[in-house]
Image 1 (cartoon, rainbow, N blue to C red):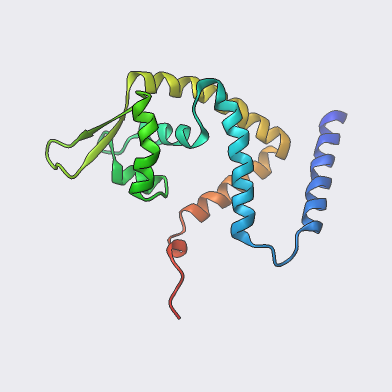
Image 2: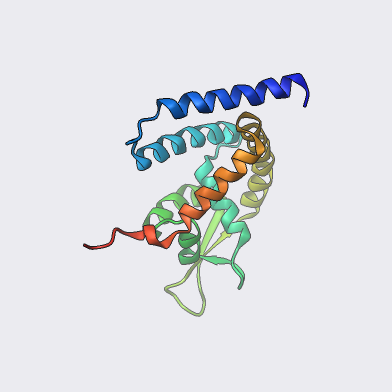
Length: 171
């Protein structure tokens, strides 16, 4: 390992140790996650600023691009994959629709079903945003290390997918 990489790794380890020793044992998990989420959102938002979109919008565009197994993604499928209720999703889709990045259309078979699709402009914006996103991801991994960043993503995805966290058990 070159001296500069070694020094950076030692610096990260020392910074983590300092933070760990400063954290009270009774620190609130929710507050800690929210603070980290705001910091990381600011980091990615600044990376996407040249395109005029935020990290939340990038996430939605990416999920819409993935679609569903059967084709275009429905509002319900999108809300589920985003771990978001449908009304919040609808609120977040409005600026994307206004800016002609997504379009909403009713299902011809079931008028209760609405599909969300990327427009041509949405596809182009997403393609450009992916380059900026990859650069931000690389910077994040440089700051925190590839392995810790991967471990963090794994933990966060396991939390997001844990249905036991849907509500508190009734005693």
